[in-house]
Amino acid sequence: METRALGRTGLTSSVIGFGAIPLGDAALGEAEAASLLGRVLDAGITLVDTARSYGLSEERIGRHLAHRRGEFVLSTKVGYGVEGCHDWTHHCVARGVDTALERMRTDHIDIVHLHSCPVEVLEHNGVLDALDAAREAGKITAVAYSGDNDPLDWVVAGGRVQAVQTSVNLCDQRSLGPIGESAAEQGMALLAKRVLANVPWRPATGNETSEEAEYRRRFALLRAELPEVEDWPALALRFVAYAPPVSCALIGTASPTHLAANVAAVEAGPLPADLVTAIANAWRRHGGDWRGII
Image 1 (tube, one colour):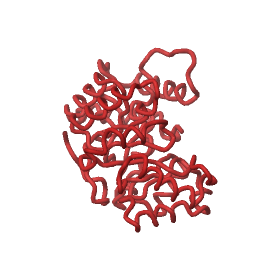
Image 2: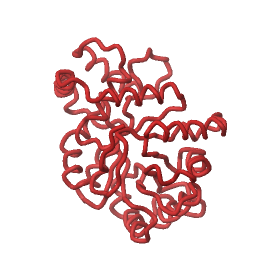
Image 3: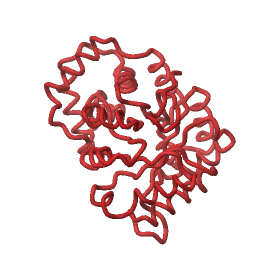
Image 4: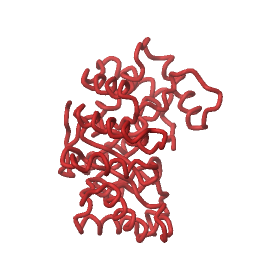
């Protein structure tokens, strides 16, 4: 699988990374979790992304991948949910890093994101200072932010982080524009999340969230201007994985079949140039004022 530099962090990663939300589900058995993580690394995926809020995810990564720690870039998110700390404070972020190190049975974490906090927190609460201190102490390699819209703009403009994680998909291309270009120019890695846009090509279930409904509305507008597509998941993943300035596209699944399909999709390489142009033209006609979906 193709590998890339993650900006100027000094880290490299496969073109797709594993979004470890599915590991957090207690309904997924321990043996299944171990097998899934083994399949991820064996498939050539070399970035694993998790978060404090992903249930059992961090603990399972530590339990089942500590012996293979040198094979992958480890990414997590902090800022909340630490016992005895107020959320979104210097102390909470610092303790969150230490707790993540313990949970994942490692002495360093490659990328640590502040997880979707608003601009006022970034400006006043010392949360970036806490990650800077963790970096100086050798606990983490790259300070990062995960989020969209105004907070993402603020973080990129400030130039204090080495990586960002943000929504990028057919229906959410805001971060492929000036903000993503600015991040790349500063040497920031850009990790793309929500790459399948909540699969809006599937039939509606009738109990969608507002975010899912908005993705479906946007997709209907874009789809009407694109040629017939047999495999939307593969197209969507290839679009994101090979879109400048994306460094790594995150995919999350508990299904070995879907995991293999995702790997096969990116190994097919970039989409044809005329299809990329058609997608870009459809976005310009409809998506110019669309904000990131959060």
